[in-house]
Amino acid sequence: MSARLRRAVVALFAGAALSLGGPAAGQAALPAVFVGLCSDQVYWQENEAVAVKNVDLQRRAGIDISRVAIRWADLERTPGVWNYAMADRVVRRLAEGGIRMLPVLQSPPAFADAAPVNPQPGFYPPKSFAQFADFGARMIRRYGRGGTFWSENPHVPYLPLTAWQVWNEPNIRPWWASGPNAAEYVDLLKATAGALRSVDPQVEVVAAGIPNSRLGIPQQTYLRQMYEAGAQEAFDTLALHGYSSTVEGLMNQLRLTRGLMDEHNDASRIWLTEFGWATGGAVSAFTTTEEGQAARIDAAVRALAAERDSLRLRGFMLFTWQDVVGFGTIWPYFSGLIRADGSPKPGGFSFLHAVAAIRVAAGETGLPDPPADPVAPPATALPVPLDPKTDAGDEAAPPVDVPIAPEDTAATDPDDPPGAADPPPLLAGFEESSFRVLRARPPGALGKVELTYFPEQGGTLMLNGHQLPFAVADGCPLGCRLRAKYDVRIRVAGPAGPVWRRIRVPGQRLGLRMGEPRTLKLVLSPAQLAAVRSARKTRIDVALQVRRKPSARAAARGTLRIVLAPVSA
Image 1 (cartoon, rainbow, N blue to C red):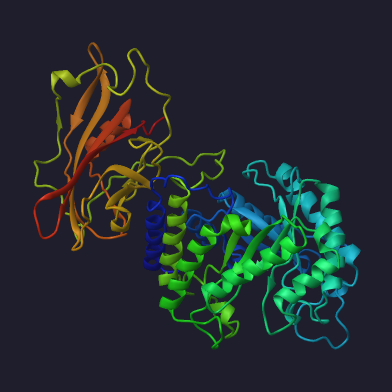
Image 2: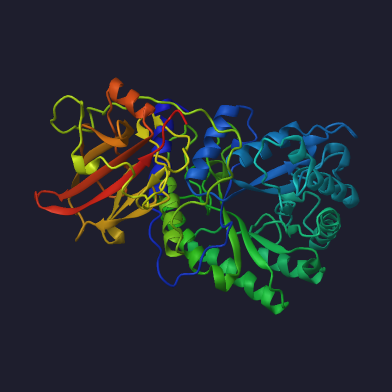
C-alpha cells in the first residue's frame, strides 16, 4: 500500500468515526459486540506492519469483532507436533488492536480428514469427530478464558476468545466435500460443543454459517434438517451467511430463519457471520458495480440494526475488508471495502457512515474504548506546519509570547473548583499534523482534532465523534467556510504562584464540505513549543465560526476548550 493510498484510507476511517454524534431519544442500545468483519487475508499475513496498520484502521472504522478461521491443518502439520505461532500472532494482533475475535474451527490436516484416495475439490470433514473435538478443546484451553496464551503473554491486553464457531458452510460441497449431510454436521457440532463446554461451561457455541446456495442443500431445508437432528441442544447461537442479490433477499433469509426457530421454541440469537457484495470478478448474483455495492451495504447495515430486536440478531460480519488478486476470479475475492491496492471503494465510505448512523440512533456517543496497552508509547513533540495547499492562517504578527490581562492571572484554572489542585498529569504531546486532546469540552474527545459537517443531522458539527453545542442553521448547500481562532495559554510559575501566560498563534480558514473531516492544525514556533513542553498545563480555546457560501453571514459560532498536560509528564 503506497503512502498516498494509506493516507486516503486513514482519512476515510477518521472521517467515519467523526460521524458518531448525539443520541437519538428512545432508541435501544446496540449489543456490546455487534459490528463485525471477515478479513482472514489481513490477519494471517506475515507482514506485521501491514497487518497491524489494517487492524488499527478497522478499529477506527468501528469494528467490534472479527471472524477468523483457526485451521487445524496450520497448527498440526505432523501428527502430534503442534506449532501455535500462526494462531498466536493473529490473536495477539487483534487483542493489541482492541478488536475481539470469533474463531472458526475448521480444516483438519490431510492425515485427519475423511478425503478418499482421489478426493473431490473442497474441504472434507474430519475422519474422527472426537479428534476434531479435542482440537477445539486444545484451542479454547490456549485462547479462551484463563488460557495459556494469556499467561504466557501478560503484556497482551486480555481479550479471551469466549465464542467459538464450529466449521464453515457445511451445507455446500466446497466445505463438506463428501456431500452435505445435516445429520453428520450436527454430530460434529455436538461433539465439539461438548468438548468446548468441558473446558469453559460459559462458552458461546456458534453453529456454522449456512448460506443459500445452488452448490448444495438450500439454506432453509438444511436448517430444518439440523433441528430434526437435534442441533438445538448443541449451539447457543445460530449463524447464517446471508448472501443475496438484494438487501430484501438478505433480510428475508433472516426472517425465515427466525420463524423456523420460533417453530422449535428456540429463543437463541442469530449471528449473520457473512454477508456482502462483490464489485468484480466473474459475473454472479452477488456481483454489482462499486456504486451498487455501496448502496446495498448502506441499506443492509441500517436494516439489520432496525430489525435487530425482532430477529434477535447477535450481530453481523461483513465480508470482506480488502480485495485479493492472484487467487482466481470468483466473486468473493472482489468483495472488499477497499481495493487490492489499498484505496477505498465507495462501499467503504458507505459502510462506515452507515455504522456511524446506527450508533447515533442507538444513543452511542463514540467508539468503545479498546483495552489499554499497559506499556504506553513515548510521547513526541513535533511542530505542526500549516498545509499551504489547503489551509491559510490569519494574517498576524509573528508568534510571540505576550503577557495576559491581570484578570487572567489566577493561580488556579477557572474551570477547577475553588482550592482544587492541578489534575494528575497525563502523558500527551503534540503529534504530527494534529494535536492530541486530553480533556475537552465536550468531554471525551480523544485523538486527532477533526471537524466534520453533516447536513442530514440538522447541520450538526462533529468533533472527534462528539456533537458540538451549536449547529449550522439551514445547512450549507453550497458548502461553508470555517474560521478557527486559537487562544493558547500556558500555566507557568510566577512570583506569587502559578500564572497563565498567553501565546499568540495563527488561526485557520478552510473549506467545510459535507462529511469530509478537516484537521484543525495548531502552529507553534520552536520557542513556543519549548514553552508548552515545560508548562504545568496548556489550555487552548478554539473559537469556531462557520460562514455559509456565497453569503458572508455567520451561520454558526461557538468555542471549544482543550486542556493539555505537559509532554514531559
